[in-house]
Length: 215
Length: 215
DNA sequence: TAGATTGTTAATCGATTAACAATC
DNA sequence: TAGATTGTTAATCGATTAACAATC
Image (tube, rainbow over all chains, first blue to last red):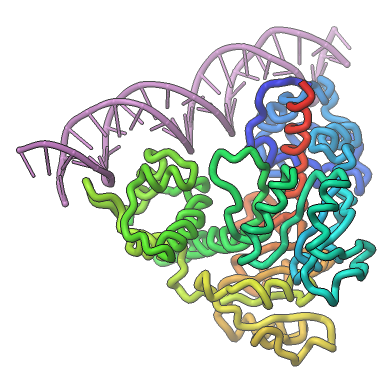
């Protein structure tokens, strides 16, 4: 695998490649060219070849790409085979939605424990995952290898909880709280899923569409 | 307002500006320079000035930017004052999480109706929004101005439901299904919130971090 | 007026696209 | 061998950063 710094743009495209390749595999396609793949994804063939070549030579001249092989390569690059473990903090609506419906293991992540303040939830199992009291969070992190914290607490709890996590050695947070958790330049890896940012971008494009119609 | 095509990168930064400005207003800050704003957001002052100048002259030389005024300008650009209406399809876990916890009105969107196939939900109110049968979806769209459809149905229903929506004139979809809804080049505005793509990007950065440590 | 900070042009940097030799 | 398609270099395009005149 090459060592040059991979741009964020490339990283963001990898999961889309992965989903498309899964889809192709499911429909029995074993081989695909960058041209065909580009048409299906809306990318140029050049871009696809450049993207893959960031990580090595996955194709074969005159043939194209072997779908299952390429799929495995990309899964490896994304760390899906590393057995990362995650804990979920905040078994509210979104937390529960993730536990019940989002298949962490499909993406190579083990959700090993959940935490909540609600005494009615503590001690129960939700979708096969044990819910512990927030009081036990620190001890759990200290005694278990936890690679990722999924943060689904209410807005007000976001900052204090994230500070606890970071102070106890958590280095990566999947953030659903719509709150910026760290200062710019922090070494902690925070992946934000800011629903409102997404909705506002949509709102902009809808506005833009209506404005275009008027003319 | 200027007319040049605004790049997607700029659009994606606008909601972050908005959140930061709300925060500044809440703490009573009335005026800010591009330098200070840049430090707080991790952007360069140049970028901030370029971004704002896409839409007009919002600042004042020698002074900086008026926080409430700038906030209003950005809210307007994002279409928050247009009174867009939305319907939500699929009152499952994620749908419910949005209805109960996500404040659509805070972002200028009116959630006017929800739809589900489950007869136990149909006719009920969820967080003040009426849940109708999926059978009534077509009629409702025909008889009401609906700007945005929030798609929170299970994966299998994603494509058929989105086709129904589009066939009935829906032009913008906020997509939580982790499924690509339209072909590349479609005129329909789809804003994807692909949880798995986000998690995999995080997984990549965690892998990358561990690889860096090893050396 | 002097100082501060924008608006805007120019320079740089990086990402995408095109082209083509290498090779299966 | 001929055809296809990659890997990779070069060209283009666009986005970010720097610089500075305009001006509050």
